[in-house]
Image 1 (cartoon, rainbow, N blue to C red):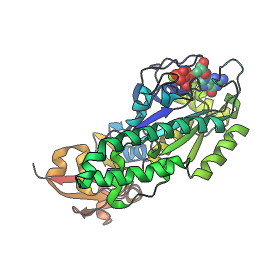
Image 2 (cartoon, rainbow, N blue to C red):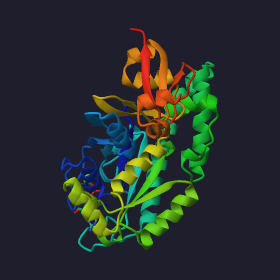
Image 3 (tube, helix red, strand yellow):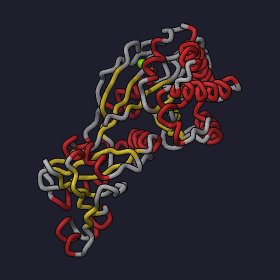
Image 4 (spheres, rainbow, N blue to C red):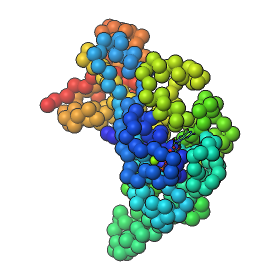
Length: 365
Ligand SMILES: Nc1nc2c(ncn2[C@@H]2O[C@H](COP(=O)(O)OP(=O)(O)OP(=O)(O)O)[C@@H](O)[C@H]2O)c(=O)[nH]1
Ligand SMILES: [Mg+2]
């Protein structure tokens, strides 16, 4: 299905370093000068899930295939970006295409690494970026409204709906708030999404702290945490530099390294999971001797549409889903045991898939 998270922030704050750590590559050039990144870097990342390993162990699956999420490392934005400053607003278009934003904030002190405004102040940085995104939204709303005038006059229903939503967004933005604070009625949700406003995208703050602060953060990340909480957003603490080093290590070395740093899991795992939650995603599994595999769906997805993630034919010809909840699968040591314990259910078209379900689809060709 391909959910995309955009890595956004000021120049030189560690976005590409983080991207490389996430994708375990050195695909993105990361260097100590602003505007190092111009073209966006795109990479797929496996979503870590301990349940998948457990299922594979029980079923003796030969292969483990995690579900994947896409990260896009986008060029740095600066004050005035919406008016063409810095690398201009072509990068705003890159942000338009993502489902959610990982907003990287510089929380590390290092006199050798240039900050575009010459000081470390992540809360002010967050405001700078948010302001640019808000200004870009205002501009795009004004353009769209002009484009709608004739249709609205002609009574076109869709145009009237769009105009009404644009006006609501504009009022909030002009009041200094991101468009995501608008409460959208269910009937308007689709049209609202089509507006593709930058400040409607869910945001997760990523505090990039110094090496020794990865476990507990620092005064800067604490302030970001307070700001995020006030906005109803989440934040994660990470040291991009350490994560990049860890991503180059073998698994057992990485575990030792994490222990030495006082961390119980790689920050990246936390970040990926937080992104997954932010997008209201959940996972179901297919498990057999050949492979154990995780699949991503939106919360609230019905069984046929969940099947469609594997293959369109599964959705078209859907008959039913044989379903075992994750806990039941584990408690009864696999499919056979679950069946015997009466824990395998046959679910039809109106079944809403639950996070952790182990599914087997039956379908007509
Ligand atoms: N001390 C320290 N330096 C870091 C950390 N993360 C990144 N850096 C350094 O900061 C510089 C910029 O990192 P990049 O990852 O290229 O930054 P970016 O945000 O992608 O920058 P642009 O592409 O120019 O927008 C590099 O020299 C990194 O080594 C960190 O956690 N601690
Ligand atoms: Mg970069």
